[in-house]
Length: 353
Image 1: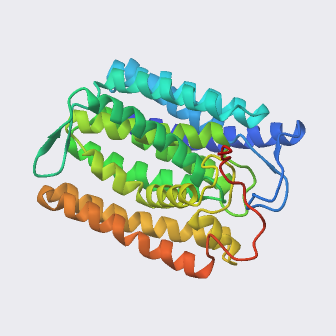
Image 2: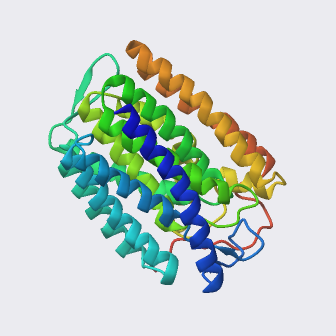
């Protein structure tokens, strides 16, 4: 197992770096560029679609792990089928645009497929006990994976942030899974981290290529599915995975709730996330993404402690997510989401009385 895993990870990292470079050359030759606009955080046209390398390496690695008996066949099918579907709709969205409703349907189908194959979500651990959900747990799991898929896409808006998050969550979560005896799921988590590291070499500020929806949606789907599968496997509780993704979860969720409460179109493109406003306030992409990595490492320490001391998991979970509001508020003070005198913003259409 250890030799197989080491070999696959090295190949994934190197392969991701090589494939990303080829995708960049292809994108430049065929003018597949992300053009700056009023909602962008970049200033020059940049190749996109680099996330294809992550998708190919992770899905290929999962197929190989299943073939040699390291990864359960149903779990492999969940990642390959569902992840492939999410990546495909993301690639189409990158190339020609896809209606939000179509994306939502595809994401739900992919999540439903994955949840069915990994056994639903009959219960989840709070550290000291189990919350039994019954059939409704499957629906909650589908919605959770769909949200993870989209929040990762929302948070992939500056150089290095999505790749850095994937490496931190993949390495720490994979290590905990390995220590828990869930070697198959650990291989998937490590694959995600290794492939993301190869891509990040091209994407760290200043980015030479962007991940695109094909990669960001796939990563969100992968972590969401890992969380449900590892909960069912008895290895790493779902709450630990939420902690590992805590920066993205808090920023995306709080921002969406605030925008919705203000009457704005929830799915409209914007630059209101805390990390985007931090860049707009004058901080560099590298500095913001670097701070996100630091926060991720801190959450990793909390996650390990909660895994080692199950009685403390729930209070640590709640406390860590609440503490993440501190940097969010600091950014708000530096660059408020809603400023007087700002340009008109799109709002939710209202029916005439």
